[in-house]
Amino acid sequence: MAVLDATRTTTASQQETNQLLPAADIEQAVTSFMAAGPAARRFDVETDFDWDSADCGKLTDGQQSAVRFITLIEDHLPGYFALYNQRFPLDERVSPEDFARNRELYHFTVRWAQEEDTHARALFRYQVASGLAEPEHLRLELAAEGRRAFSLPHDNPISLFAYTLVQEKATQLYYQQLRAVVTDEVLREILNRLGRDEARHFSFMADMVERYLIAYGDAAVEPIRDVIAQFRMPLADTIKGYWRWALRIADTARYDHTDAYDHLIRVVNRAVDARSDRVNELTRFIAACRTTTHPS
Image (tube, rainbow, N blue to C red; front, side, top):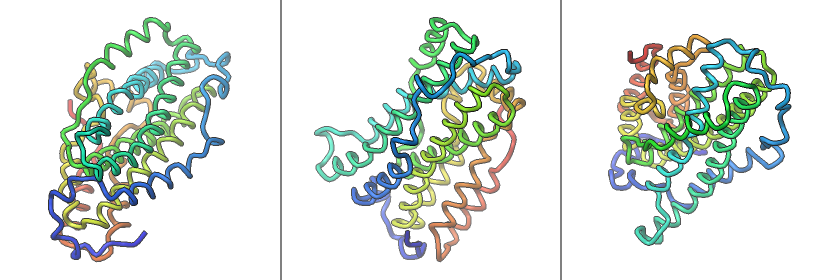
């Protein structure tokens, strides 16, 4: 991918950056994503795990809590998917040109949703097979959270992709950390498969953010900065006691969403050749937000 001369695109209007990239650009990003995850590499909940060997007794209390936590996060997929459908509709409300852009993105979102739903099913199955939860109780627990609306403060597509970039990378990193400390081989394999998918999801979002930076330069800076300034992981405002729970699972395996910020800085640096003051300020701001502190 060509690199950007940041000074070349500072006149891009806010209206331009508020829409999706051209359909051809999105198609290229989607094709790369699909090629990185062929059918042979996908996993099957029913056949790819030795469910009879799953044993929550091999987990510490903190590790069990972490499994319950990530199951809630992954199971909220209908809320995440609905947000994308709302932001990028496929009906007569949009122009043919916008429909074409949204349709190309939809090729990604349906695959993304299918993979995330598989994550939720695998974690549900693990909880039941390992003895961590009874199925009916777990369904109701997940429904209590799943019924709550999911929203983000960002309307700009660049912001939405930048947010999901951080969220997907942070999730991938946590799965790697948790896998390193658990001893149940079934859970270890689940976390391995989930982390591999999250890495691909991150790569797609990174590709989209990079393309926006190349297309719009400085005009893309402020939406990305807003994401970091307001960032909260999914369901942070809906799950009761979220931050106490997050701190508890961090005691089990390192959990700090700002670990993902270094990866966002790399995306910016990769896209930008002739750096502007605004781009430099953005990378300094992201780096300054790299911290291990959490709200109480």
